[in-house]
Every structure is written in structure tokens, then in C-alpha cells.
Amino acid sequence: MFNPTHSTETARNTRKLTSRRALHVLVGALLILIAWGLWRWQQPVPAEYVAAPVKVAVAAVSNQPFIRYLEAIGELEAVQEVSVPAEIGGRIVELPIESGQYVARGQVLVRLNDAPERGQLVRLQGQLDNTRIRLERFKKLITANAISRETLDDAQAEYTTARGALQGLMAQIEQRTIRAPFAGTLGIRKVHVGQYVNPGQTLINLVGNNGVYVNFSIPEQAVSHFKPDSLLQVELDALPHLPLTAVVSSIDPFLERSRTVNIQARLHNPPSAALPRMFAKVRLPQSLPENTLSVPETAVTYSAYGEAVFVVQAPGEAASAPTVRRVAVKTGERRDGWVVISQGVATGDQVVISGQIKLSDGARIEPITNSVLTVEAGAGGAEK
Image (cartoon, rainbow, N blue to C red; front, top):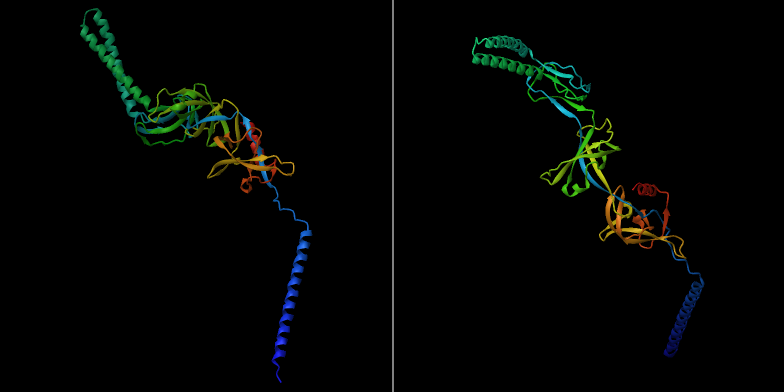
């Protein structure tokens, strides 16, 4: 028979058993957590991760005279050069030259047809002889008062006219023979035998061997720096590895409308490859008044906040490698891979010249002293 009192007691005992088991599980988990914490506390703390030093090239800040240059662009001009023209028109009958030939002064270059003038020459020569004989006869007659003074004057005028006509014709004949105005080297012939040329037409170019000028212009503000006999450095675009020098020979006393002044300088020992009309870069060196701080251009980094360099900091007592510090700088003139620093660095500072992209303030570095950049920086600093 069902006993309700017995059922209630059984349910109560079951709940007590379940609560006791849950408490045992909770206490066990707590003990396990405490044991893991004690074990973890007894383990040694791992060392903090430190990035390896960044390998970079460094160079010292240079402190020595920095040469400033006043620069200009010009072109070469031979001391003697001309495009030989035809003074009068005519047909070429003789061309006794070759392109590139060396010719002496007065050597015949081109002969034009002068046959008609030669025929007139015989006629005028006869007229001159006739007027001369007549004039001599009248001079004898005037002493005997056989003729009037007016008749003698007319004879003298006829003789002078005939002589002038003959000289004019001879000059025309001479114009048909074109000669070299000076010794030099010919260019490429522009005409051929049998060709008809017009007055003023260029027949051939002639360049003398007496030297080469370089002509250039400078702003009026720079005129005071250029004086006669000033020594210039010249570099030709066609001969970039051949440094040349020139001496200022003349300065134009008149300003151009563009407010520039024309200057001409003569090259020292110009090479045979230096041809007229070649472009030339002209530089007038000027040392700054005192020693100037400068660094290789590769040391300067650029950002929206301005220009900066990474200066090498000596390692501290506990540090094993040097570090870098980003320093804002104020730059000046640039030349030959170097840039003037007017603010931000001091003499003796070491700056990073390559590898800056991996650096930040306080970064550890491993300086490289035998890189290509450091060798070039040392050479450039020695040349300044």
C-alpha cells in the first residue's frame, strides 16, 4: 500500500546527496585552480622580447668649407668660324676641296664661271691703254700751248674713268673666286660642281684652329661676381667626364631686355671633340666665408612635418647597441650629393645615410662602416 510519508523522505535524501556532490566538485575545481596558480607563480618570468638591431650605414657630419657655385648654361663658339658665302651669283666651275679638309689662308675653295667678265676685261684694258696714250700726248701738247687746259682735263677724266671701270671688273672677277679667309678645317660641302648659287648662299663652313669660346648669360644680380680673368669650370653635355676650365675674356657692358648680361670666356686647351654650338655648363666656384656643416643628401628624410635626420646615440651602460634619435633639421644648398645643414646637428655627430625606412626614435642599430654609401660620402667630403 502506497505510503506518502516514505516518498517525501526519499526525495529529501536525494536532494541532500545532489547538493553534497556539487559542493565536492566545486571544492575540487577550486583546489585545482589554486594549485595551478601556485605552479605558475613559481615559474621564472620570461625575458621581454627585444628587436634585433637594424643594420644601417652612417657617416659623420662634415665641417669644412663648402663651395658655392654660380651656374649658367652656354654654348661653344670657335674663335674663328664662318659660313663661307657666295658674294655674287654664278655657276660653279671648280671645287678643289673636300669635306673636312684643312686649308690655308687664301686657298681657293670655289670658282664661279667668269668667262663673260674675262671678255670684258680685254675690252676695258684696251680702252685704258688708249686713254693713257692720249693723256700722255696731251700733256706734251699743253706745254707748247697747242691745246687748251680743258681738253687736257677731259683726257685725264677719260683715263680715270677707264681705269676705274677696269678695277671694278677685276673686283667682280675676284669675287667669283672664293678663298679661305683664314686657316682652318672645312665642314661638309653644301654645293657641287655645275650648281648655280645665289648671292649670299652658304657654300661651306670653315672653323679655325685658334681656340674655342664659351658664351653664356647671367642675371644682372650676379654681374659683380664675374670679372675679367675669372677662372670658370666648364662641363660639356657631349663630354660629361672631361672637366674643362675657361677664363673670362669679355663682359658685355649692355644689359639685355631680359635683364641678363652676356659673358664670353676662352677655354684652356680645348679638345678636338669640343665643337662649336655644343651646350656647356659653366660654374664659377665661390667658397662660403666659413666652415659649413653638411651631410650626404641620402641622410635627409622628408615628411609632412619637414626635413629630419637620424642622429646616432652612443649606447648606455645597460645597452649593447647604439640607438638613433630623429632630429628636425634646416637644410640649405645642395651640390654633388651633399646638402648644407644650418640647424639641427653639430660637428662630430654621426647620421644614418641609408636604412631610415626601418627606423624610429630609440631604435637600436648596427652601424655599417664599409658600405658603398659611406665610401662615397667620405670621398665627397674630401673633395669639397
